[in-house]
Length: 338
Image 1: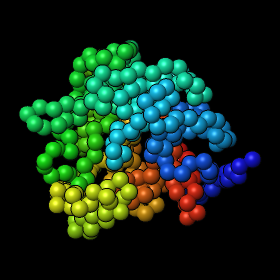
Image 2: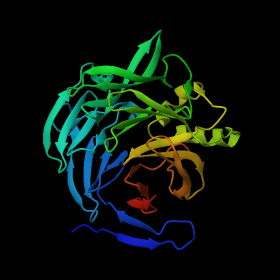
Image 3: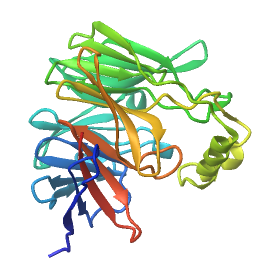
């Protein structure tokens, strides 16, 4: 029986959380993303998918391998177009390069659909009413764009909801602190929340009609020489980029300000914004309700693996799950109530 460490740390400091649970997940070596529902934690590591029970943190199922057949997945270079999971319904919707696969909550394969256009068919498919929303790609006047599309049940495009210019443009400089367009659907209120990484959040209903645009209540922070040094160190040492450093170093374009938000999650009628405001041990989150009303701004235990990237995390039902590598190179699951 594999060793499993589970312990509870009570935090008595006023204003902080009442408890922080930690479990060591020994099967995990290099996680990419974390997803969750009320029963399970779903972790992707390359083309591998792990399902852990949130009751006792034991591994329930591991599946996935590289390829194009059933239960096989493909990913893009430099971590782009990675495997993503939506677990809001009674099925797992798993997006990988060129296809969408359905599994049950125990990890048993059901069916897969190859996407028209392969890579450009889209990524990160999430159910929304009778439709799916996903991140797509478009080009116009020699420029590339990231878009959010609404599709039918067979993943055929119904309409485009939002378009932003991609930070990756052929033959041009690359924005050094760019964040991709992200989306989250929330089936508890049948809404889609989009983060175009420009300091706003856009809310749509289940048919793709725009309901509201929120301007995030976060002040801009100037990008300093110290930030630049840390960012260069990130690109020179991060495994996805260091082999391309000689190509990138003269093409990186540094911003005047730090990103306003570093991530967004939506669950159970709430929107959670991770701001760039942080210390060595915690980070600031803004919590909005489904109408865009700011509910609270508060810092919670939260760690970054480098200057630019937080450790993998997910938020479901006011619970923050984050995987953090400890000094023994083990991956700990930290659970924090928000």
